[in-house]
Length: 343
Ligand code: EPU
Image (cartoon, rainbow, N blue to C red):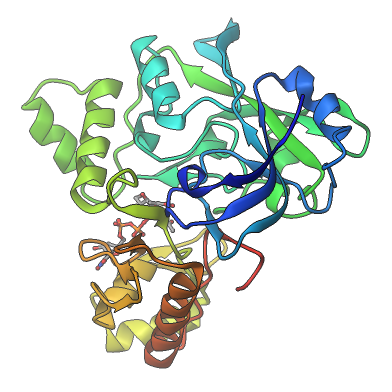
């Protein structure tokens, strides 16, 4: 196994930022991990484990080793009481995997259709869309533990999932390399259509007949395509900010001023707000700094309009945070990771 040097990372990040890796190696099989750890370029503190590159912002060249996880494979590992366990290797493309499970007649992933990225990245930020989070269908996560240099299976509970959060972003950061994920999918379809206008979109598609998981997937794809830009055409990293969670009191104060404000009450009494709505209210759709702009159809997404640099994106993000802070006294937190860390 050998690394390449000064490797162009532009095709490996969906925002399309121009950056090079000092050293780069592709991982095709998880069994190669012990060899990677022995490479002279390997340094645990600075290595970047890279999946689909849909959650990173490269603001300069990467000064360490980048390991691109390309291990593939999907297999059934067991069945019990209507639940089918499917293991997918980290390098599988997320949406292709979702389609594969739908073709097998399984359900559970249909609401998560068309999310960019890889299977291995899905547990890290607990990807979620249209009322479902991947934690709802993950059985366990297989990892290479850099402390012990052994493979471990972490249960769903051990992964400590929360909204766009997990062990892999907290205490386990820099320790666990995710090599595969086991999903618990269902043989029988139960529609989860509680989010926004999904039920209406599915009903329109089915015209009176009972929907299937494939119908839900098709409706989700249509909604996403109508407002989220395709990273292959217009560079982006999906939602740029997390939806902020505020106290019940803060939400109440804002509601008195903005009765139409979208809000999602949480089990603990706090209230999640829609960052896209807050940004939109500040009339920032289409706002551009250098080559980076706020998408004109969905204010939560920043796009690479014209050879944006990391600095353009950073300045735009800061401008948005400051404008929203001034207007609503709400702090926005960036969802993707800045490399190197900035916000
Ligand atoms: N809204 C606006 N203007 C906008 C954008 C949104 O007024 O420009 C309003 C919408 O009308 C709606 C509310 O804000 O009332 C929420 O919008 P939407 O349903 O489009 O979802 P979101 O909160 O913007 C979240 C996820 C998305 C996921 C969708 C659907 C986060 C940070 N984002 O977006 O996830 O697809 O819900 O479930 O939680 C991603 O993480 O990359 C991502 C795309």
